[in-house]
Image (tube, rainbow, N blue to C red):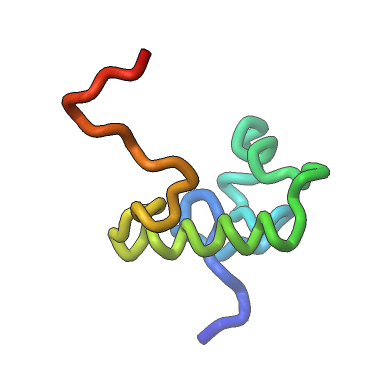
Length: 80
């Protein structure tokens, strides 16, 4: 397997340019802006995003009930 990973945005071409984007995606300013590093992009945060991405690719729910901080209300119950 190649050491070059797929583009983070389109996942079609190798992500050889800045921020792991392919040559097509790096040319779009709005896409490039999404992947620019931010102050909150810690290793923990990026690891969480990678886990969520893997779950989405596998077709699993992103936030299963046991991971929810607050349980969802009963469908027939109104919240005041």
